[in-house]
Amino acid sequence: QVHLVESGGGLVQAGGSLRLSCAASGSITSLDWIDWYRQAPGKEREWVARLYSGSTTYADSAKGRFAVSRDNAGMTVYLQMNSLEPEDTAVYYCKHPRAPWGQGTPVTVSS
Image 1 (cartoon, helix red, strand yellow):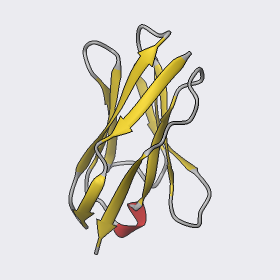
Image 2: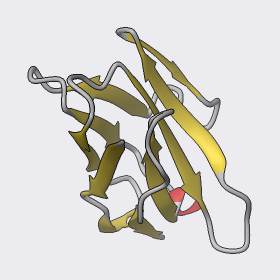
Image 3: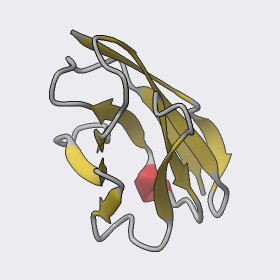
Image 4: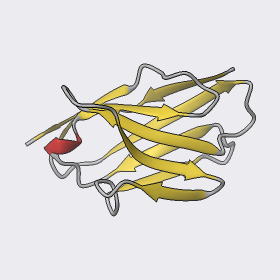
């Protein structure tokens, strides 16, 4: 099985930036497919971005502000978030098809 641990969340002012990390362990040699999701208080979990076979795709809410990348070892994926808005406040999760949901990392953007 694959295990993922998210980190890097925190409190930031509107307009600021954060970089989230998703570190993998277990039965995997490289993170070739990672989705980022988020769940805001009182709302359903929503898809944010995907890294798949070297290509990235983004939800409309993330386009132009968020960027997904992977480290050279291939075991950590990042979500760089710029120009953060209060509406980005949520718990952020990374997900691989062979991994269970993790605890997520909370992001709070103050106005």
